[in-house]
Figure 1: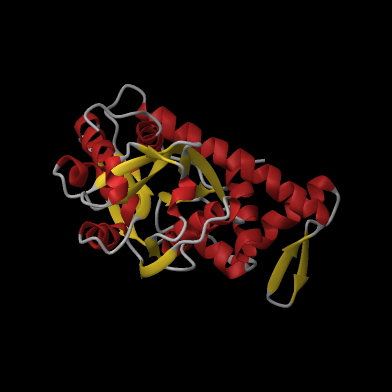
Figure 2: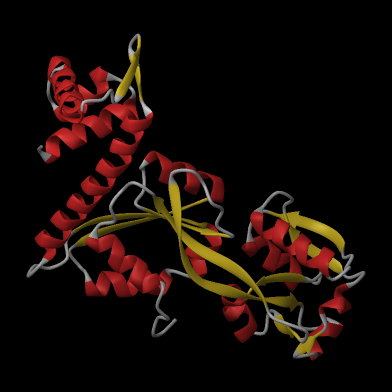
Amino acid sequence: MQIETLKVFCDLVESRSFSRAAMRNAITQSAVSQQVKNLESRFETQLLRRDGKSVSPTPVGRLFYERSRVILDSFDQMQFEIKSIGQDMVGSVRVETIYSVGLYEISMVVKNFLRQYPKVNLHVEYSKGARVYEDCLRGVIDLGIVTYPEPRKGLRIIPLPADRLILICAPDHPLAKRRHIDIQKLNGENYIAFEKGLASQRALDGIFREHDIEVRTVMEFDNIETIKRSVEIGAGVSIVPLLSVQKEVQNGLLAQVGFTDKNFYRPLGIIVRTRHPISPAARKFIELMQTPQKGA
């Protein structure tokens, strides 16, 4: 049995079409049919159900597909690794990240990656979370970087170090004099929030409910930059990732305050397609994302 036969079968199951499987492998539909017939003869069982122009795997066919997919992914990974031995890292990596992570979390990663692997074509695009999931599932990108990563069919999550959350306020705000406060002190405060429905705000709402806190939401925005500008002018306080406000704190535009009872974090993760091998170049990018960066 050849590796090409396994690929034809997997393409047929995934596309549910003899014609599309034939196109993917540059062979005729009759050749696809013959390869399936040979497999069914070899295992002496039916692997596919045919319903007009559509096909679907039988229970045995599903098992054969899943095991074949593992073999194909392992084979592809082996090819990537063999090609990279003794050579400079080459290829391309397509990364899509939400704005806040792209602006504050990965700038040093990108700089170090390009310095270490100058022959790799790295493309980084900023987008909203829903679009990152969609593009990853469609295969438009190699790696998606999101906050509060959610399990999705066809995707797996690679955890990244989480962001610590802190309170920010204007330098002349009464809370600015404190280095740490009990989160209960936010009761009744004017608060600048993320828009309802965003993962960050859902998580913060959960924290407020857990600690029986009621803030007075005066503004809602879909990005950290506008939230920071609103806090700077004294419109209210907010809770954001620590790394997102370092420049403003250093320049005296904002004050940051930690929490005394416990630290709160924003989870980060890389999403990749479950049944798609990760190239050596993409693996190096992931490794850098998982490692504290010098100069960051």
